[in-house]
Structure formats: C-alpha cells, structure tokens
Image (tube, rainbow, N blue to C red; front, side, top):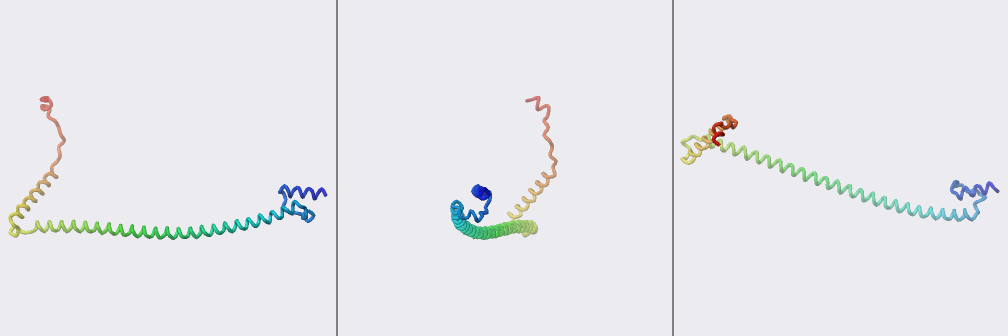
Length: 154
C-alpha cells in the first residue's frame, strides 16, 4: 500500500508518467486522463493551425521571391539598356569629334586659290593664333622677383 501511495505521489508531482494498473481507477488519474485527451485535441488543432500558417507563409515567401527575381531581372535589363545608351552616346561624341577634326583639317588643306578672301583671312588668323599658342607653350615661366629699387620707392 505504501508503494502504491509513493507511486501516486510521484505521478502527481510529475516525476513519473507511467500510471500503474492499480491506480488507473483513481479519480485523480481519471481526471488527468480526460484532461490529457483534451490537451492532445487542442494541441492537434493548434498544430494544424500552425501547419496552415506555415504553408501560407511558405507560399507567400515563394511569391515574394518570384517577385524579387522579376524585379531584379527588370533592374538588370534597365541597367544594361542604360549602359548601352551611355556607350552609344560616348561613341557618337567621339565620332563627332573626329568628324569635326577631319573637317577642320580639310579646310586647312585647301589650296589658297580655292579660298575666298574672307576664308583666307580666317585661315591666316587661325595660323597666327596657333603660332602664338605654340610660342606661349614654349616660353619658360619666370618666377616673380621684385626690384629692390621699386620697394624703396614705395
């Protein structure tokens, strides 16, 4: 009898889960069995709700991932278009520069008799300016030095 009472106390305190056959009809354990069955039902319902939420969240995650990938693809496409447009603009600018340079050189290559009077004066002016620029680039800059006489006069 003491052994049965000791087992009963262990079960009530939660130290043991096994209910012996002698205590199966005890009112405390009958209530405990009913409560356990109710708890198991609620847990199964809760589990299914969690599973439903998990499935819903998985589907939502898949949808968001698909949208993110689509957005990333669009962004990459727009970036590629922007780079291509920028490259085309650079090529056009370079092409215009070379064409302008060639046209300018062609103008200077024309023989003097083909030039009209105003064009000749323009050509001479351009050649003079080019010579001045060359002379300036060849000139060595001198650091500023003040004359002692000037300082005394001040």
